[in-house]
Length: 278
Figure 1 (tube, rainbow, N blue to C red):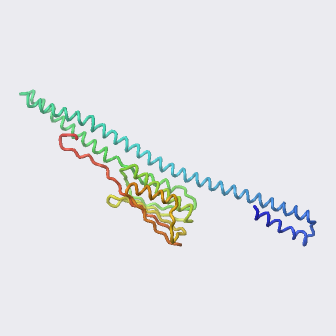
Figure 2: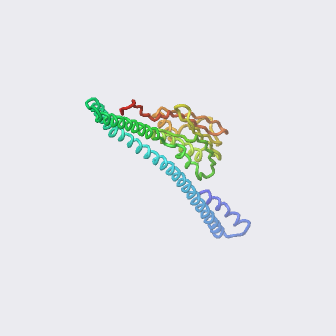
Figure 3: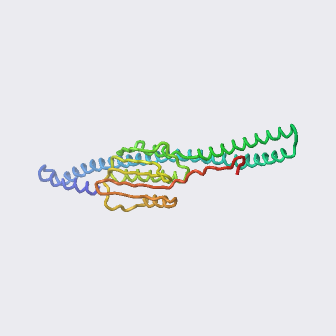
């Protein structure tokens, strides 16, 4: 505003010398033009603030959709785990007790009664096997599809085209580790939009043995020396808590790349001996 005012006042001598305006009229004319320029400046500033607010709202909505998808999967996993635990703790132990009692009854009975007791014992053992398989399937199926949580982050990002290469399916057994990876991807995309000036971003995620590799790179300005801010420091702290690491590579004029390696805890399969539920 000071620059606009000074620029308009500097025109006053032109009005006085070449156009023959009286000094007061020349000053008023300059102030009038300064008012027009100030109005245009304020309107432009409001438009810029509104654009920034819309971008922030879009980013928050994308993060909300991604987090909602992750929470839905986490709730599903927790419910499957709870059901598996209840089946194991209630039905399993009761059926084991029933099988033991039928085995004792088989030794004490004779004739046709013994045959029926042995048949009941066989049915009880089959039911134990079915319960064991049901518990194992519930636990093995309790994984989160990380790809479904990552994809909403790429929707409607202005001035940035995001290319995703995500292994299908990309399942993570631990909800906390899935949440860490989601936050890492969010931070990388946010930094690309705010700081790098990139127009293209590539995000890839896949499993390598017991590790999950998340790589994000862009075609922005880059830097020969990366000084981590609060976002990157928080990202590193989250990863170290779960045994992961972040490798950063950047060069001026060649963009920015971050490679995240996080050990993914396998879902503990329930291994039970035949005819019993542990």
